[in-house]
Amino acid sequence: MKAEILTIGDELLRGEIVDSNKAFLSERLLRLDVETRFHSSVRDEPADMMDALRRAVQRADVVLVSGGLGPTRDDLTVEALAKTFERKLVLHEPSLAAIRAFFERVGREMAEVNAKQAWLPEGAEVLLNPIGTAPGCMLLAGEIPIFCMPGVPHELQRMMDEQVLPRIEARHPGRTVVRARLLRTFGMGESNLEEALSGVAQGGDVTLGFRTAFPDNLLRPLTRAASVAEAEATLEKVCAAIRERLGVLVYAEGDEPLEAVVGRLLRERGRTLAVAESCTGGLLAERITSVAGSSEYFLGGVVAYADAAKQALLGVSEDLLGRHGAVSEPVARAMAEGARRHFGADLAVATTGISGPGGGSAEKPVGSVCIALASAAGTHSERFVFPLDRARHRSLTTQIGLDWVRRTLLGAPLVAPTLMRRTK
Image (tube, rainbow, N blue to C red; front, side, top):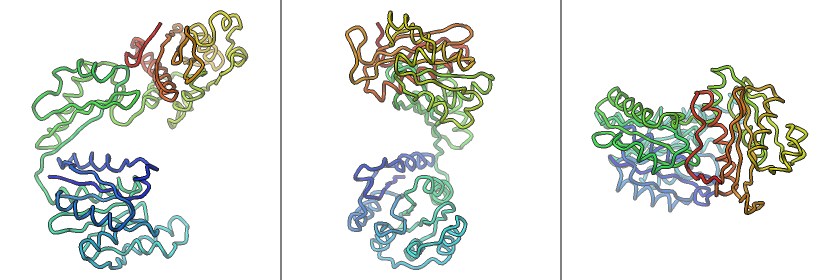
């Protein structure tokens, strides 16, 4: 069964926003073993939209459309759909009532232009939108269902799960069940992961995909089976085999970021954390505090960019800075120990480096960074050179710091990542 996904909006073609809807819809279709064969995007231009719709129904078994259901003059999806398949627009009174009720709930007066959203192609089936004003619709072009959904991601996602997928499944019962999982790893490159997982998920109804999402590498085992229970059982075995091979390199499943994993471990073990940052400029603290409830375990941080700040706020000695320089393991260790002492934390991470693009030297080239973790058991530090742009250098540095905290809490060795690593 083939699908085409059509997203509509000038902002997509201009690159103003990232089109995440395509990825979401494709992933959801895969659960029903529906293969997305085509991705298309067009402007808010009726002629282009009509051309795209005609092509879609000629080459796909199901068409999903997102965007262009709003109340403004450039929201033209419904009009283009009706014109393409020679349907007149009719007012759907229940949808109009739902739109008015939505505005009443949020305490706003409905603008008359919103009534436009209740006009749908004759014969279309309405797709409810309980969290927005734009109802979706399903229109049959011959035997081909066309599902139109809002472009707002959270509205589209709910409509897809609650309204669209059940209708697709009902039209094609007894299809193979497809299930997949996402395992997040940090510290090893794709080629090394492939080598480490040799023989796992090869052949049969199980496949294993690899994808880089810097600084992580993601593994997606996928299986096809006759039932959900059979598919889940197979995935459980495959994921267990992957974890057995990779150990603590696998840090999470699904969309859970490393900072959330670290927060959960700190909370479970009743431990506290502080940070001392130079080159990362507060990015490490920002990641930690982006997790709801982080006040339970995160005590605070110091951004000590200047040497004077390292001395005054973290107790790094002038002699140490003079002998080794700010970007050095001794200074990183002193920063971590100073933060741990100042905040009374169980663990403290420090970062100091040269993220570039300038500021390097022959002895300490751009990309140099020193990271340290202090605990009651002592202080661990390492020096790296990561030849990356400024943003990725800072991102990778914070990821290592978080990973060291995770490994410490798990009782695992503080192994540095092999990806992008060059030490001196």
